Image (cartoon, rainbow, N blue to C red; front, top):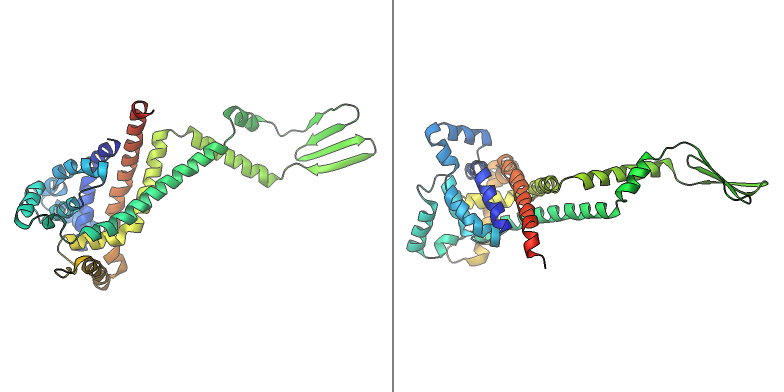
Length: 315
């Protein structure tokens, strides 16, 4: 339920940016050019930006709950670049009727995996690592009262009088101890660098402890989204080009190895035609604009829904 809710929030808020990203990757044009093309016909701009959004919202429930329906990406991208007019679900059912189940997947299941696995691994690994780090910081933090007392403790000299046999004088980081009047030993209790480091660590732990859960969820989600985009840009560009009719098509009957070969050949073709940046990282700007807020909203919604449902699901 939390995943489905988060997916719908993502689609509704950020679908236009995803459309711009797909058009950039399909055409190889910069974001500014694509935006100008979309704005050239103001009467249809909104319809183009939200092409396929209703079907996308419906499918997101299943996607968010099960991470299923790989064929959904294929038809969504075709709708976004203008290759499908009218209902995207209608086009899917028409293709299913004419070509059977193969039409829904085409030869794009492996490209979908090549893009999705790095993205998901990058996102989940970053998000989980940040939350593990947060838990370690909170576990090592001193109690609030002790931290406040330590912060308020003055650095002035103090004299502590022990029983007659021993006297201890403390000044700053130097301690003098004497068991009799004829012997004095000086010892260093801590260095200034250690004190500074400990103070900084304590302040960091206090900031983390005082950060509201939803703010942390959004910050960790933003970092996870940025990492996921960076590691998955090359396969995402290749996948989009293949799904929109470009690149090197796999040979009929070539199976899995043919799809892998076509994917690699398309990547090399893009580099040869557009260069590394233009071929494998085209559309990174709009993709970051879409994915970073998207993962922020997603994890805030997931964690928020989980906290609301927790009293009813805890055993």
